[in-house]
Image 1 (tube, rainbow, N blue to C red):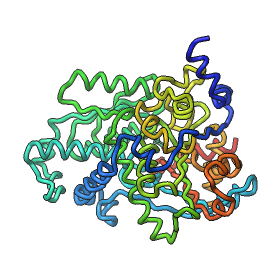
Image 2: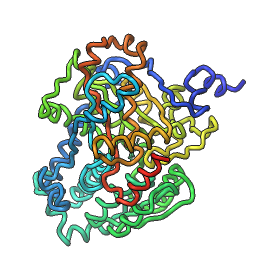
Image 3: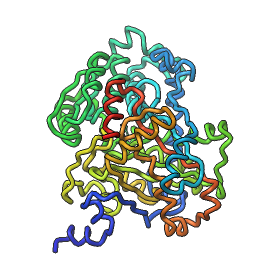
Image 4: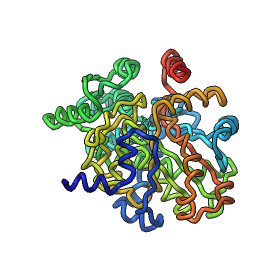
Length: 439
Ligand SMILES: *Cc1c(COP(=O)(O)O)cnc(C)c1O
């Protein structure tokens, strides 16, 4: 028996993954927020620095994207209560607590959670270049970077990224708006409308016949041979991660506005769709900074692409891909079609995530139609992955006991489903998603 075979045999969840059964894995490495945060190797200061950088850029964002003028150039999403959806779900299985949706699906500029990390990394790079060239100081109004002269400056610089779609949209739209020469390397599963939209905005799109991993690899190679090209590395970027983390830092204020209390007797549960891991990992990192032990984070993945569950449960992280256990990585959940998890996210978050679960594409489409019917909210399939979390947890008494969460505390919990995309899906595409659910 090889070491790998032995390792895989010792992890009970792996047989469910192999069989493509919906499953949940609870993390026995999870510890206090304080200790878990130390283990990440990232600091509160770094996350706060990202938040401050986004504030410096707010005047530029407000000027460049009029839809953000109302929020003063701060790209942030609403959160809404889902009473009808909760009632419908509860017909099948208990759903204690109150069900809320965090609508990153409708973030301005690029309509997905990638409007956090992707845009942040482009801005961080632009700021670095502009500061080095002496074009601005941190005290200046950054909206001046939109002037023709500054566009001319940025046009001499290249940015590249590999993407299944949404990261490419965010980075392409933001980079092109500043004037960068930007190339997006798209995997085969990326939607046609995303490619078309990017081209309209002035980004260069290169298409591949293979999956996300290949698109990223090709992008990385193309950038390596060109010293003027800045490659945004979805699999390893700490900058992206910190951009996402800002979401967590901002949440306490939003909960306060909604009159929601989070403390030891009113826990917060957050369910995050997970692809390569940067988005959900970064958000969870920020949430742990903000709420400490009172927040519990779960990652949700398709049964055909459970790379993070596989990586974390085996401790092999990016040392194993879903294909290694015979899974095809084929799912309709665009942003989640990732076979190998980020090298650093699983390790960084190893002690802060309560667990991961999987769900089938069929379940995603059923939930997609249910949310449309009950609440009139339309999301892309990936964005529904979190929706099963509350019921999975409620059905896991051993986990709740181990975390010391009483039935009463669960009744008082805030169940926050993180919706990650869908706001820019064209109407005809959305109709196809809805039709798929009913067949
Ligand atoms: C990218 C994406 C995710 C997951 O983010 P990762 O950083 O890849 O883990 C989830 N949902 C949607 C819609 C996405 O585009």
